[in-house]
Each structure stands twice: as structure tokens, then as C-alpha cells.
Image 1 (tube, rainbow, N blue to C red):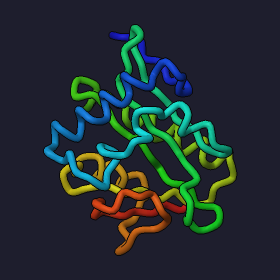
Image 2 (image 1 turned 90 degrees about the horizontal axis):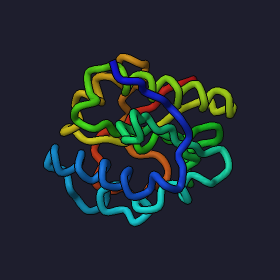
Image 3 (image 1 turned 30 degrees about the vertical axis):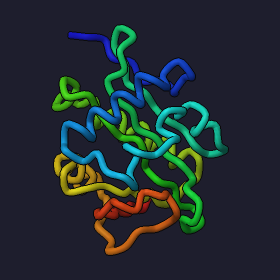
Image 4 (image 1 turned 45 degrees about the horizontal axis):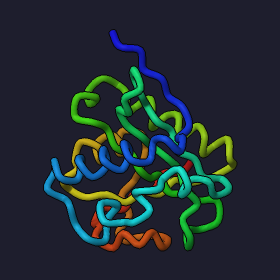
Length: 161
């Protein structure tokens, strides 16, 4: 069994992580404007996560990035709320519990940073991820929160911590 480590994002991860994220969007036919796919910050995620109370966890094995999951204090969110962001897994990493490890790590980190809620945005194309969010206690809400700039998203969810 491969050894998987979960660690904080590093500057050297920028290109591989941007490539992984965009490949997931392409895999699901979701390469749309108004999403992470077209967001210019996707190419410099290490810098993006250098904001106070923001973090991104990377799952890797033998130097290869398998996935990521972060929390971010998106502008315009209610007090105490952060956004769950950049949760993506490579196709061969799915179904092995890696996504759950990343999500639990991000949720635990949000609690440690004294957030009281987590918000996320997604698409119907990412149905398996949405099902996982539901199992972890995220509830659907009927509108977006905050100013992520990802106006193409159609699924909005919120979890009390």
C-alpha cells in the first residue's frame, strides 16, 4: 500500500495543483468561466493561502500530489464562517479514503481556528463530492454567501462546526 502524507501547501505545489484542479474540471465537463477553472488565483495557490486564518492541505505520495482541501476566509461571509475550497482528488485517488482524510483535516483545522461554520460552492457534475458533504453534515442552502467570484456555481452548502 502506498504511503500517503498530508501536509500544508508549499510554493513548489503551484503548477501541479493547478494542473490537477483543471484536469478534474475537464474530466467532468465543467471547464466554465466563473469557476476555479478560470480563476487566475488557481495558478498561485501557495500565495493565495498565505492569508490569515487560511490553509490548504495537500495529500501526496512519492512526491505526487493526489489531492487538496483548504479553508479560506472569503470576503463577505458571515462572521465566524470560512469557505471550504480547493477540494479536488486525482481520479486514481478516489474511493480510497483520501478525500475523507483531507476533509476531516480541513474541518478540524477550521475548528482550531475558531470558525463556527463552513460554507462551500459546487456543481451537480461533482455529485459524489456533494454526497460526501451531505454525509459530513453540510446542508443545502438556496443562495450563495460571500464574494468568491465563482458565479457559475449552482450548489451552496453550509455546516455548523
